[in-house]
Image (cartoon, rainbow, N blue to C red):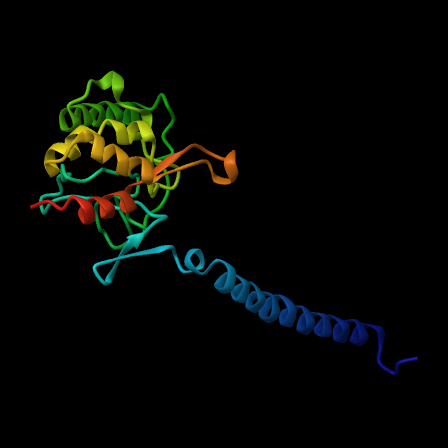
Length: 211
């Protein structure tokens, strides 16, 4: 029998267990996962960063606004869905702010949400020259994260004519690019098809630059 009392033996066993599991869970497992992620999913593990013109211009997983110096949407670009991420701890304003992710948490009958949606409908109708009845839901509502990088094909469709006019090309040419950057359901059955706004706008600048 061990000369140590029962309490001391239990304490030492707990210390040994703590050391073993710290090594396994705190060192070995993270290093293995890091190695697998870098080897198998390097782009995703590093933020799915998008490069253009020799510099990082954003992430394919995070929405980005396309505005002029006055904060108004630029007609030559497809616009993302509204973002609830409009404030942050650093008092920055504007949507797609990664320092303030999250939804509004306003219910469908909330008066503030209803007023916001109606105001957005009027703005989209005027900007894209479409009737309110043709505006899809994701054009006037924010996603759960407030940082959705995708819009629905229906949302992209109502913006085609405006982008085509601003770039002086045919709507058919713009639709071809929209189709190229429309991605199907993840794994074939999750979610809905979506158009990646950042990738689409970069492709527009490359193929149909604004002069």
